[in-house]
Length: 435
Image (cartoon, rainbow, N blue to C red):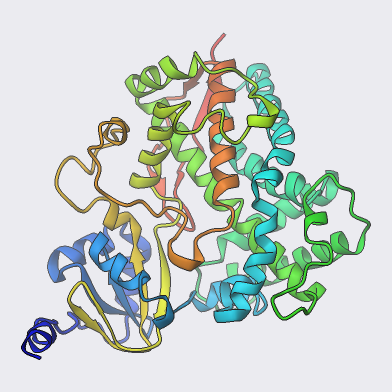
């Protein structure tokens, strides 16, 4: 009894910034990349603020994150209203409980080991095509844009079987849709959100068309044919089409961001590129088709793995993810009331600790000099389904490009990163291939 009383008395009240309407906090959040870090320094690893009238708790650090995610029955997934509306009410992202688990199990079939083996040859061909394009370019090429096109083509063509005009037009709409995901959800004429809603309508129409056509076996949609949820009820087309929209986003934006940030680090840090090339030069290209998912894994390419990890640590493609508390919780000794939105602040958390955590140093992951548990694809029961595909794409692209050409970055450009919806080089990372 005494022990329980002492534990309870050790719980601390939730620190707060004192923001009421949250208007200034929201402006600071979108404009200041160090928004969370500055407030963590002032209030500790758990604090509450307000964002446009929405109370929001920010957390960082392994203890706080583990405390939250280990209480899966006490938390739900949550997204801002702009994301909720643009993804749709049927989307996995907006479902919780049994409904979420059932559909997650169905969609996961698209990312099984056997599915990745099926996708491998197409991804390799896309990497080779980009290498040839870069070799033959007569003027500097914005590599970040090429990474976006590549990532979208993988999920749209390789997984969903889209080709030609359908894919290219969908890409244009997807860029419009993506830019408004974290915007103010007011559909004023001509606003980014209004444009995104129209783009969403066109995207859904194209996806319905895909579902209505015979499976061409080029993508992975046949893996979903006749899928049942845990109640034995077939997924409706409206349900499935919104899952595909989510997959396009999850398999595109984050992968493109990770690739762009990784290539940026290589190109602006020649010693790091030289260090990685020492390993890459001994890797074969293309990989063995049957071993495409393991040829460049941690065992066979430890430096490449460390490079990917460090990019995900310093510039995670998603700066944080959200949960909502269903009851009062204690997180890192701090009491968080029920019905609070909690943001797990990955960017701030990955830089919080002892040592040179603000520096880009991939060697730390080989030297076991990094105690941070990385969660670039989220964590807990809602970890990103496309994690394995994203990792495969990144490894294939890096090895494929570095084995086939030497890129030179154009110096007179802005290398800083825009942060929303994901980190990307401001000027597009202009490069040229060296003869």
